[in-house]
Image 1 (spheres, rainbow over the protein chains, first blue to last red):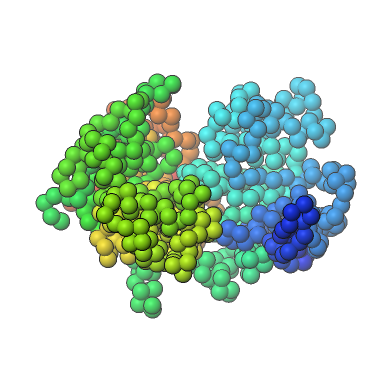
Image 2 (tube, chains in turn yellow, purple):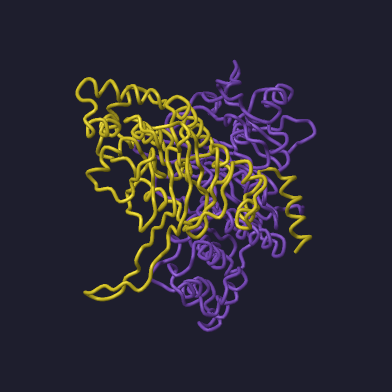
Length: 281
Length: 346
């Protein structure tokens, strides 16, 4: 393993979903090209932001990258070795290294389990810790994400959306993974809570040397957290570059359109922009 | 502005009896709305913005609700109006659109049929074919392509943006004077959001439609609003014109909201300024100012509830609920050369 090698390298990744019709006997009549030949790489400790609108294929990229979905073709290399097409058995040890944070903190936590069980389950399943040691590690994790160790015995419904997202983050970092794929981790949260979670993800990256694939539709959030940004549209990456490059000097027409549509929270600027569009129209 | 505003809301209060005890979801909201004007109500979930708006249409009436204050439309009191009066008023004078257009349409009826039904429920003299022609014209006016054909589509055959347009078309069917839009673009992609905001803007300018826009997105507010009401834990903490709220904000919560935005028009900060903590439970409010536990500028006066009042000599309609003096506010809201609540911790 050398330092120059990216942690994650995705090449020519394709995921097509069949469209089937028919009674009793299905036949494939078409396919949806959800991900249509994309490539990117993320150096260790860095963040790649993936932006795009709904249906652009962002979430499919997350799932195919983590091998939660099998790619139709293409390569996903993690620390230099190919993981696309590996059997479940061979993927299992790798799962510790790659974790996911989900969008909806209400749907991604089992309501019947206590926080301690939720955060502790990856440690238990991978045989890392048990008994008193498990409890100690879970409480340490809760503390690290800004929750109280006393929250161990509480249920998810007792927490607000932001706190639930912290629980999801604690679960994701429990096994000390190298890569975290975060699919719209703040879009369900209130504005004042979004900033807290983004800052927490920033801190954890520094402390634990995490590498992020950060997926969101909000280009402002993506720009804040990312080193590099890739813009997705119709299953393809239309542009990628450093965060400031893509946001300040976009070269692709779709990227420009996306940026122009983001409302500016400044009445004077937004009046000027409106006057300019009316003038040119 | 004429002597009598289109809509006048005074000290609106909505309380609910819940299993956990009584709570005050809306605690004193007052504003005037004129034709063609856009009032934005901003706040986080649980701030009371949706309940306030629903109460205007009589939608929050229930056995466990206690509604006080006054809502006057053209001078007529609505707070204690009969259900029959409200039923006539809904759609004809005040219409509402929601965040999720998928749940606002009935999935088993065609889009056009639902608009026709809305028209004929209020206008018995309009024939089915006339109502249908009107539905097509409405869909066309909100920018649905091939409206004459799409009128017979089911809601699921429309994209998210088209559904929101169709919902606006349905809301406009009876030519209401006031439109209440509850997070109308939150579920939409930004490019679609921009189209819907343009559509709403042209309705305000061209038809004089007055709009109450409920949103958490200050970017959207900056694009369309004339005046802004900031709510926190059921109370209005600040209200004023768009420029007053953005360029001379008086309440620390407003500073926090403005400061924590990720802005594409500015260089990105190393760390995002945040508001620590979480909004309080309405069942267990702190004594005095509700924002006190999250406010870095708390001082000895804060355990007493500050009244909502004008505190600036030259801006009688700019009101806020914070005990700090205007001079202190001007100084304390400056964080790294910009408006914010506090410098981000390292």
